[in-house]
Image (cartoon, rainbow, N blue to C red; front, top):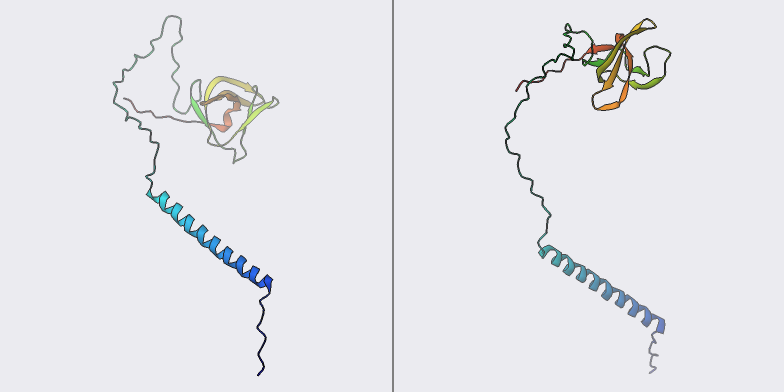
Length: 166
């Protein structure tokens, strides 16, 4: 009888098996260590920084007496409803979305400061002046004194601000 030669294992095959086994062991260890870390994270109690703001308390409001006219001050002018005058609030209207050119001075030939859009509200601080066929009023934005300029009365409408009495 003839014996078969025993097959030999190539050394690179052994090296390949060792590398695959090492990779599997490494991946298993990595997954296990991540699971342990996540478990320890879940056990800790979260800490929150909370700022406690006390609730407002009611304070008594003392109303100041109205300013009385003095000998040197002018008596306030009472305007009819819908009339534009100093210290009256007006809103821009009728520009059909194009905006109203707020000018540096009364007149169509003066520099444009900015463009006021429909429904913007302004306080009348000067005027009236008649120029170029229009009556002009000097306006100022209530919250931004830098937004001021002269506007033609044709595009302004009195804006009534109703404030409740205490």
